[in-house]
Length: 150
Image (tube, helix red, strand yellow):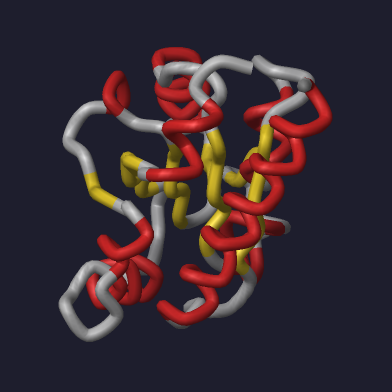
C-alpha cells in the first residue's frame, strides 16, 4: 500500500469540527503545545485536507455537516486514517437521540468507503495522553498492515 511508510514517520492531520462543544478542540490545542510535544511523533496540523494523512474528527455528525465530512474524506489522499476524538464522534454521547444527529463518524465514513481505517479515542473530553496513545496504536496498526501486504 503506497504511503504507509510516510504515515508511520510523520502523520499530518486535518482537524474537522463536526458541531463540537469545544472541549475536545481545547484538548487538541493542548496536545499541540510544547508540554505534550506531539511533533516528536511527526504529528503536524495542516490547513488543507489534500495535504493530510489523517482526519481528526470531533463532535457529533449532524445533517448539515455529513456531506461536508464525506467530501473531505474523499478529498484526502489514501490511505487516510480517521481519528474519532471524543464520545460525541464515537457514538453521539448525549446528543445521539437528537433529531439532527445522523450517526457516529464511522457510519458516515462507511457510506463512502466500506473499509476505512478508524481510530477511536474515547473520553469527554479525551486527554492529550489518550490522543497520543491512539496515534501510537494507529502507527502500530499501519506497520502490521504494511507487513501483511508485503
